[in-house]
Length: 196
Image (cartoon, rainbow, N blue to C red):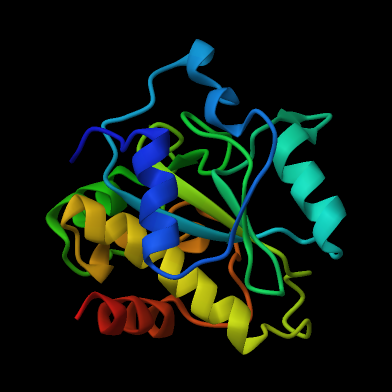
């Protein structure tokens, strides 16, 4: 459990981890804080966007959809390995998930099976949306996978968290499949290696 990083500290953490960061106009104040708190935060959640094309993906994640206002994450990781920061504060990315999973993330222990949606994750997790169709066939370029690990490690390093604080949307909310195309165990191993 932790107080969220300031926007400036978040940006510095990403850059210090070696990421190429694209700042989208107004990102520091673009959030959903008016509907509820941002924090305390407990971990990092990884998603795929089910979109293609960097520009369109960033636009959707910043502005949202007719059924879900943006921002839909804090950073969008495109296939070229760049991270586009689109919002900061409460974001519509996690939705309602399993309180048993939240307790496991807080304790940094193995995750239980996800079987209920009784806890709002939006104030509790940093969210990274990753450009991918999510069909199991759309490739994940090596530079993108590296950027995902770096982004997660950047946040974990600043908070003093281990790789066990990094989860996929599918590990939080019943019925979700993202990210599809790599395993979260493999991604956590990448994050753990960076944190060494």
